[in-house]
Length: 324
Ligand SMILES: [Zn+2]
Image 1 (tube, helix red, strand yellow):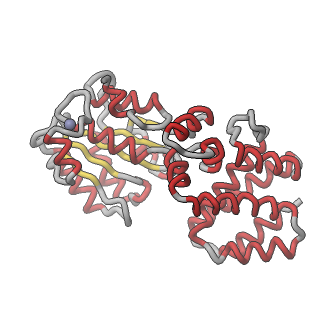
Image 2 (image 1 turned 60 degrees about the vertical axis):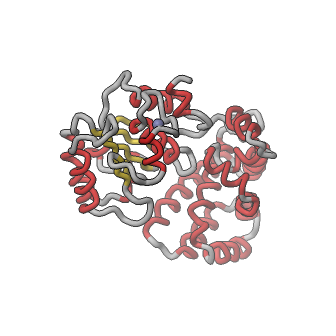
Image 3 (image 1 turned 180 degrees about the horizontal axis):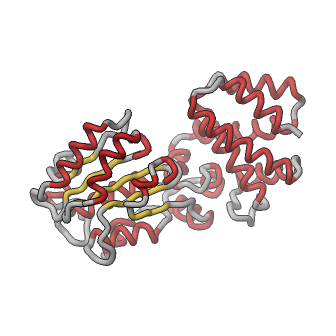
């Protein structure tokens, strides 16, 4: 089996990115020492970054094989050459310094020392500055992997010193096929409701309640654009009571507006029977100029969510403006 098949085995979409990282792990083409994988949540950043790390550490040049000592040590969380920062919480300068120090040592047994910083946007500016020296003068046998939703969430000085590996939504046909092969029913609808993100689609397929919640979020948008003001304000109050669900709801609505601008038809860019259908109804109910204006307002609301706003007020203002 070729290297790219091992890293990309069962990985849905973004084959070029998987192939590029496989080549690097196999010591062919490109000698970058820092890689930044970017893309929305559920797109495959974590899966691909873990597999890249595994391939770099594996004893086989075309790994990860899953059976060598190196692979077994890593899976047990005990590889001396693998330094992965935690998934949860803020990342500190001390953690970055420890990581940098570890990466400057010669590898114990693997070909490389490998560092992984998941969700690197959690690094504050001082922590990113602490990382700069490592990025500017990378040790010859060290490779650092970062993931982030967007390069804009990191300092330009950090981004410019990394090889960029952007991951994007998977085309409808490809995702539908891959999900159907996994036995997912309504693969096309789930793919569309997941915004063509494979990780999110698999999560929705495994969790019918979450899938139902997205359907409800989709139909809530049609209520918002059609209902009179008092009903819209009542809905704002109800949704503000579930603040944890708001980022995902806004992302779903942003996806629907985007689809509606692309035509929102089953043959369109997304073409999902589920979301495609809702996007079509949105396009029928709301004139084009209003949909563009609404999309801009949704992006602004999504940004404001990061700063702990009064969510009811935010939703009220948003819903008043989304109405027709
Ligand atoms: Zn191995």
